[in-house]
Image (cartoon, rainbow, N blue to C red):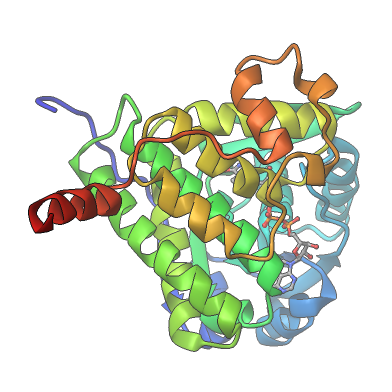
Length: 333
Ligand code: NAD
């Protein structure tokens, strides 16, 4: 790589344990006085307590893939309560609704992610209307502040943690071969992959392992920064296509497809990601998500998808570890 372009996008990140307690201060820092709180009661009740007098209204109906009719209802609440900012607490669905509100109003957003999706760091918004998903990029939807609180992820069930963690890993993997990759995203992607691949098996063993949860959330942040900074490739295109067309669940689709795409890209660590995915309690084929071979027959990359439907592991190049072992063995022999 001899030439590149890099821009650090403006987002304030607060990371730690118990950082939910800073929500009021962070909202005031953005100049907010009348906040709309988006998120299900699981965490939004605690967020409401911390926000105290800054809270103007609540909205609990965020849904996956940001349906526009839900956004329209939320916008009515924004107008009715004369809201001056949005706080979203939850997964990518809650974040998506905050971003959709910002698209229409340009209100500041403060996001508290409880999964590893990474949407909180991007200026990308996917929305669905009449069963069709469209995606757009707009600086208005980029959140101003992100508060990562490791404690909020301790209760994320293992299957969701694993699928969401592989969703995050996919951002880091695709950053490696992105045409606009640069030395900064190379560093971010490598560190994100190291943290996520080490954390997920530890979380599967003990979901309340704070060190593992900290690594996973840090990895998700770094991977989300890659998602924002460089173009995503084949893997994200396929997930978007299948997710939109067949209504597949977001994180699980990423989790199933990632090792197959890595194998087809000839990435030397594809085998390790197959092993990692196989060890986690997630779906391992698109058939488990309800797809059949007939569904994907006319799709681009039908060969790759057929393997992913059937869960047939493709012949991939041997991993670096396996190659090293072969070399060592050949000397020993
Ligand atoms: P999600 O937000 O729908 O959450 C999945 C499930 O997990 C939900 O039932 C939710 O209530 C539950 N949940 C969330 N946090 C929890 C916790 N800590 N404990 C227990 N349960 C919890 O799913 P997601 O995978 O986080 O996000 C997917 C959505 O985000 C999709 O709509 C996707 O398109 C979008 N997304 C957008 C971008 C972007 O840059 N625009 C990036 C990634 C994802």
